[in-house]
Image (cartoon, rainbow, N blue to C red; front, side, top):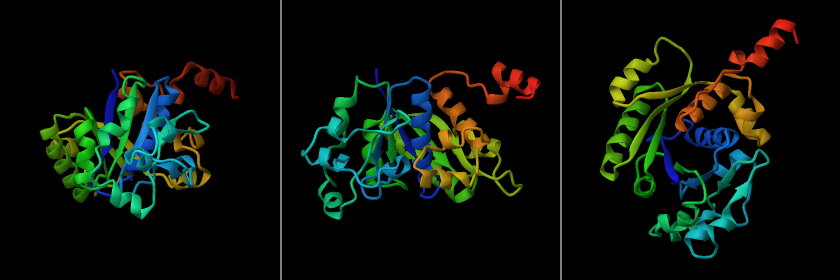
Length: 254
């Protein structure tokens, strides 16, 4: 059965799309058949995270009945599959009342996981994704404004019966003024599934058109993303320094 996982945030600027793109990449590298779909109808930019500046066919075309979903699926050299959203204003206005579920129905049963990169903030766009997802992961920052919106997002999702996987805390700096993981769990009433340190190399990866977990695989942030991806599919993830091969190379000074 295909799992449909919505990556939501409740607030813009927390790194939701970056996490969606990299989690999809990590899951693909773990052997899972995944496609990540941009479901941010008005300001979608998922394609840029995979180096796609301008798509010939997008989800807008599918929603408008001009193409099939297969026509809008693109492949990054890393192997991850993604469906970008269009950027034309006339397309955005035209799809406001389209049935999103009909656009991706043909993917169900053909892949293991469909990741929806939801709209930023709490809106009708986000609720369109909530209606068709069966699970949700909320990306937030360790700051009160972001956490308040994360809590609102969880509460709204309850009316759609979504299973909440937890909170992914992004852009952490390990400063005393940041909200602690324990307090985040208490405040949002959700488990913290992962903590991703802030790293300026995320911007570098975007300019290089390569997912961060590939271009900067040895960083703490990349390994934490891999760990979250493994949790999503019920696997254990070994950090590089925990693997036997790494320990042997370190012992030999290689």
